[in-house]
Amino acid sequence: MKILKLILISLTILISGTIKAQISVNVNIGSPPQWGPVGYTDVRYYYLPDVEAYYDIQTSMFIYYGGGIWLHRAYLPDMYANYDLYSGYKVIVNNYYGNTPNIYYKEHKAKYHKGYRGKEQKTIGARPAKGANSKPSNGSNHNSGKENRNGNKSDNKQKQNTGQHQQKQNSEQNHQKKSNEPKQQKQSSGQQQQKQQNQQNSPKSGENGGHGGGGKKK
Image (cartoon, rainbow, N blue to C red; front, top):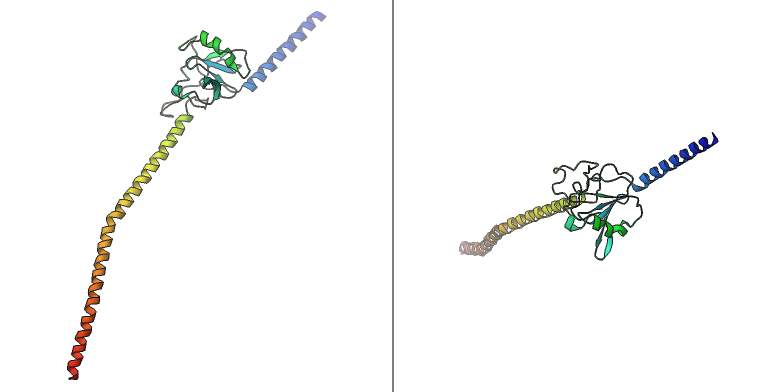
């Protein structure tokens, strides 16, 4: 009887410890991206064979080799800017929660070549509609996997269009100003000629008046 009680107590402690460890892992890892596969809430890394990179769920960063070093970036390299994270296959990296999954890179690259497809995967979320982002990219927002870069491009394009519109308005104003200058010059020239004629007429009036006065005196 005592042995049975000891066994039950041991099982209770073991189950309790496992549950606590599971909860701790889930809290520390963070939320998986919407393009992540369903059913793997206790992993930290995916390996993406098509782009030869890792995705860190905890930091929302991609880890890939470039320029002689391993990089941690919010985006995939430019050459994979249009890569579809929703349709791409993700290899689940089990039982590793450290910061350098790339120590297994040679093994993963050899086992999971580009284009590798295992069993069918269903993503956690649905792929965003094309209307939401006209030109998708992998992006740093791991909930959609394809938003930020496109947003920046849209902002830049809007700023560029605004600048072009402002430049066009300034050009039209300058053109209108130049077209008005000859009219203003012509008007000013006419006023100047009128003024000169008035000045020339003034002495003649004085002379006529003097002769008239002299005639009366005689």
